[in-house]
Image (cartoon, rainbow, N blue to C red):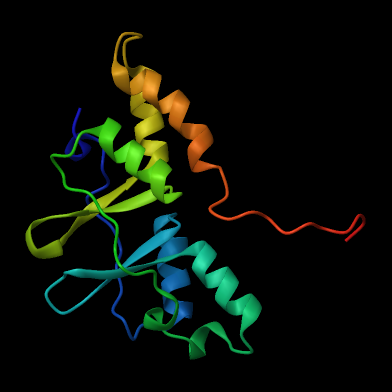
Length: 157
């Protein structure tokens, strides 16, 4: 099963100088948690996630309209190709601790987005003998494992 069969092809994107207020509007309108940042050639140069925005606004003395995508985007871009196997992409998500990947064409041109939810929905419909079904269950725990140890929290904090 390849990514092209489950990816979302019609995705919102933004430019590097797009303010975060506009990025949030795109996320809200498209019910998504990631917006690829593209250059003039529609090549993905970064991604902005809902988490990136929350961390930026929570740690900087700035408004969403005063910050731009370039200042919070994640680079380098980790993506996948439309002909990549779903199992391989799921393993990449687990290794990178991410839930969504841009689907890239030649020269990094944006073709779509694939999420762990897309893969899980496909795995749920797969026959019991399909490796995707088996690997999905194993990998889900890895995606939710923090990339770094969490700080100790005081009781009642």
